[in-house]
Amino acid sequence: MPGNAAEGGGATLPTVPGENSATRVSLIGMRHGMREPWAKVTVVLPSRHVAYLDGILIDIRLKHGKALSRAQLIRGLIEATLRSYIDLSNADTTTGIMELLVKKWRRA
Image (cartoon, rainbow, N blue to C red; front, side, top):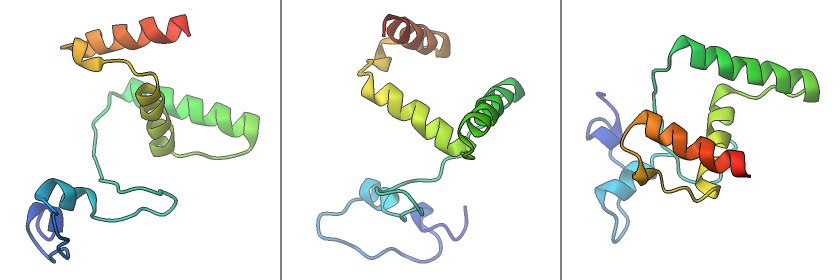
């Protein structure tokens, strides 16, 4: 994307001793409310996945009176996966990843 410092265009980021390009991309900014480096990622999802996420968010809002974003929900799901210590590298397809997660979470 033109003008994106992480892609080499636009403004340059200050250098830090020992910094490399991987570190530089992760240090693009701090998003409001996030306490660690972040990167913006765009993902295309099937409509049924979006509807599922939105349904969960509606239920949360009705039960708790608090509106969360899709991004917050997705971050929570990813963090739960991280904390489950599942080795997702044992799968080589989306179906394999789903099977590993379902197997682990059903036992929990």
